[in-house]
Image 1 (tube, one colour):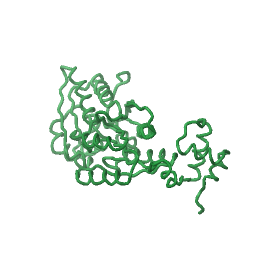
Image 2 (cartoon, one colour):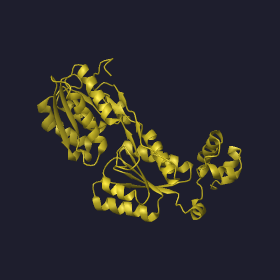
Image 3 (cartoon, helix red, strand yellow):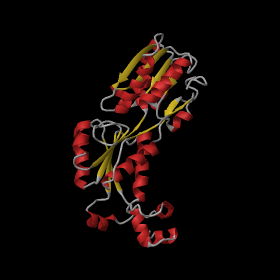
Image 4 (cartoon, helix red, strand yellow):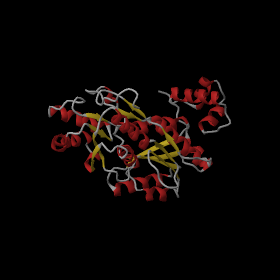
Length: 335
């Protein structure tokens, strides 16, 4: 199949080739209506701008690096897909690496991105030490997503406020014996903020009890680890409600409870986090927190491009939404 050209895009959009070039290079002098027509035409044709000549003229690679903890996870894969979508519209190439748990591999991967000459980098989630991100920000433009690093622009969710609100709603719904189950924090600010929100609420209630389990191994296979934790430990504690930091952890708890003959939510209520696609179809469906991966990714990408183009930027925060389903009976009017 013939590769689409800039003339093809111009023809479909009903504009000149120079207008197409200006839109796809990020020129803001073009009207929003015209720019949208050009981007729609480029996306429809699968047009990919030839950035080589442009890089020679402007001394930019038109490429960015994105660092994710686990690209196979649903939330992070959605982030990766969204960043690719927005980058493609303005002719940027995106290179991905996983932070994982191997410090040497992380450092090597980041060095490869820098050697490639990326114009900037986006770090989403934890896994990379804040001091390393600060050092990198001295070399190229850097934005963090779902975490904060001093002196680096960030795009975050209101994790602490949301979990506090969720915990308060569960208390108002009649629950008194709480258990919080999640991954250890390490350098994951989002996880520590969720736990802080839980404590913010619990500390206000003198008749509520709370047990906390923070497990390193939950950074890996969340389903099987949470399943075993319920069988070997949590089933003996028998809380009234389990607040988890991830939907897969919640699903593992629900599966193990049924194996142990403990019905959810009749005996124990369970909440998750992330609103994975499977959570709506699980039995019972999982009460959880929805966070907009596409919105996070779009703001991160646009902020980074503004930095690259020497425009003023600022940090921002995105609200989350509590989704009430079958696994936890949150009474109407408590949210």
